[in-house]
Length: 287
Image (cartoon, rainbow, N blue to C red; front, side, top):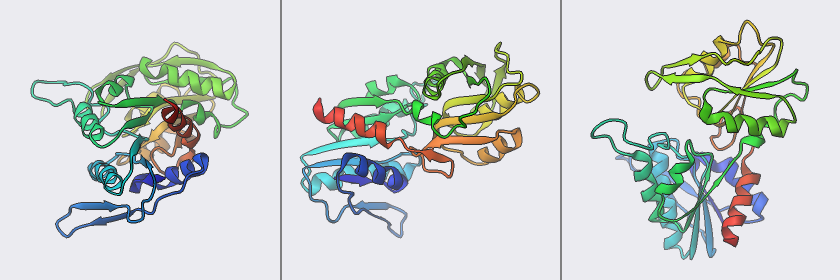
């Protein structure tokens, strides 16, 4: 039975269709003191597949509650799908006294599940923090589907070397083009400095590819190096968080279209990660 978190209702429904499993009725509530409560009142299955994006602190608590609720209802196996894992970028201690937040969150999830499926965590090494079996799946190729078929001599650019494989996956799924990356220096949580790529963007369609668009600072800064040369500029990401005024930054920068998956459900989530998540869940079942 597929058990959705509040932020993953669309993806969970699509996953239920892909797997041919029923979708659980889940109720989300909040007590007067602000505490959250997620319940699965009619759960009746041996296996629970909890699907919960953790893009807020409340979502983290809700995920832990759903894991516990299905165990309480008799689930003998719990598979936890984390489409977007919050805190994954805090994968090490950056200064004295700082926590490794990704590790803390992974340990918390591990206490209530048998297996975990992650979709494009910011670093694959985050999987090592879990104390249970983890499958990491890549939704990058799914981003090619919503892009125009008539891209002119396309150039797929990642904002740094770390995302170049993701850009290559989108290029391969689209069917052709070049791949390159910028050199990025992060100045703060919201400020980045980008050095231009050596690739020639003149009179070409450019697709900027990253795993996450959070504040939009990286993407909008990248566009400033392309505006005078590129023909059209598109942005593609697996996790379209689009926090604060990120959407405004990208629109003002001149990006023609933003493409994302439903790991984070926004109006730009024009393609679903459900097929690759379903394959990973099936692989987990066979493991």
